Length: 415
Ligand SMILES: [Zn+2]
Image (cartoon, rainbow, N blue to C red; front, side, top):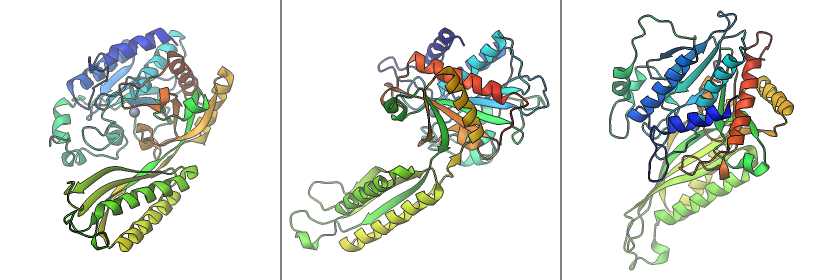
């Protein structure tokens, strides 16, 4: 693996969308800068001798043929888009690592039994369309072309109308793999959390991806004058909200050993004025867990607390369910292969789950899937301050390459 080439690629790709003021990267889905980066990836794939195409959604897919082309491909990839003023490594790490793996195989003339497909996914971040991992959802059949007609960006542009003019006419060219005929999917990503750095580990072998269940809570009190309404005669929606937020935190703390995190990240107060008792408050509640049963137990506890607090305070409420995603369990045989290579390479590692969603979770129900994490400084991500060392990148790519080579051997059986 040529780490100089890898670091040069980071610079090259991040020249697309770099904010000169704060160093943040701006490659929002389907912007000019993001599409140029996708084009650059496709050209580098072509240069590496791969068969490349863009699918209808603009995911870039490239295939390195195996000794036995009829065998199921092993897929490796991540995303090329960013949030607003995002970091240099979120997503791009897994894309550049996949490319470097191909360069490594070419340079050492390593032939694999199975074909290897590398992918740069479009539109993983929810910044523009308020929904995450759309590229991998399209590719795995979880979002159809018709669904795209119902998805809008923050300015009201329809996703289908944005994607359609860019979509490639494949002239009958067959896709480079079939959705339901994949041997394995593997993604390398930065952790975006502080655990690996805290525990001084080089590699995270990811066992689960947690998924959220989200709610909108609207509390109805009575707006009245802050001076002339005596304390016992108030119906204050904001103090009720404060008590509810603290209870949601306390319940999250109670279950955090079982992989639960609870967050109220949004509050809207009406009338939001110094001299009025707040009559209405809306909260957005995000409850995540790696196991549905535990997460839903937490949801029930939170609902009970909301009822109790509102009854006690004479407040009425509406609780709207905003939907839930299924947590994903990754393949333990792939994890064991990565563990074996960490041992051989003398890299420290730990098994862990991911609190954030990733493209990999969309593959869990169609093929054996796994993820590798590397630490990032102070766990900071989605920020210009996102920072990863060259050494950490090199170690992550080493384990990715070694694991993929094993996966692409016909005698590696995944259970
Ligand atoms: Zn990412």
